[in-house]
Length: 302
Ligand code: NCD
Image 1 (cartoon, rainbow, N blue to C red):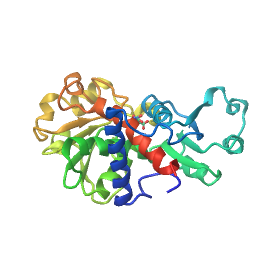
Image 2: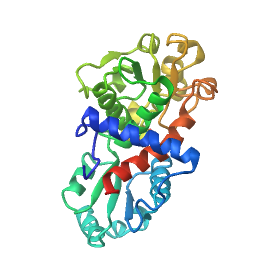
Image 3: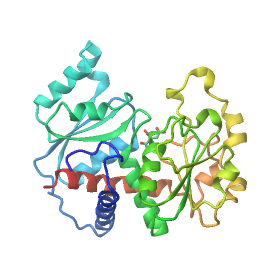
Image 4: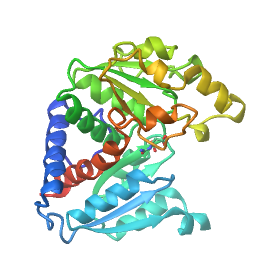
């Protein structure tokens, strides 16, 4: 495996291998014992054309924990602002011979375009509404840690599913691993084409999370919507926000997930987001490091 461009290209065995390696690194980080020179002498270039807190920082930390050098390229001070084309920018950076490029871009398929142009490893850190494979992998690790399995679980992905690459990658991964995936969204936030045929769709949150083992909430991706289509925060929360009352419809031991950034009082109530036993948001962020260490190790560790 040279690149990580999407969940589509991964087999269930390939997904399990990454989760197993991520689990190994999660334990190793606690014990303080792992090979800190695994990626010594490797240079990793991060190219983020969209903003990021969790993904960029955790790839950076994961790479450094394995001994790699990291160069964070900054779109706003690059020659793109001097009208250089995207492909010329990629060719320029590729000529400097990094060992890997980690890219986030708003254009559909941008990481695949780059992978076809450069010699090094390319990792998709989120493209358009299409794929965010490392997020789906760290979510799978988090579910495995809490539930001990993926197969047979009912997982409701709720909110702005239409514009979410997290929903798309998670739905593909979880379906491949034998989970029952539901999409829960009002009609205007439901995708026209489902990533997998087996997904069950609900337009009502209570019905959509009934009996669920995992409730995954998503923010409204306002930056990918026309202004006129964006609902008011209060109206959205009243109709579709996850409150403790609504959560009673899920299984009593259901866990709550959110990839972040989270909009409190819009898709999720404070008391749900801050639930000390069921809210997995901090665990998801923490799992970003071992999962991305696993991805870097498998792709670049020889
Ligand atoms: C998500 C993303 O960028 O796709 N965030 C993340 O990587 N954790 C979700 C979002 O922006 O809403």
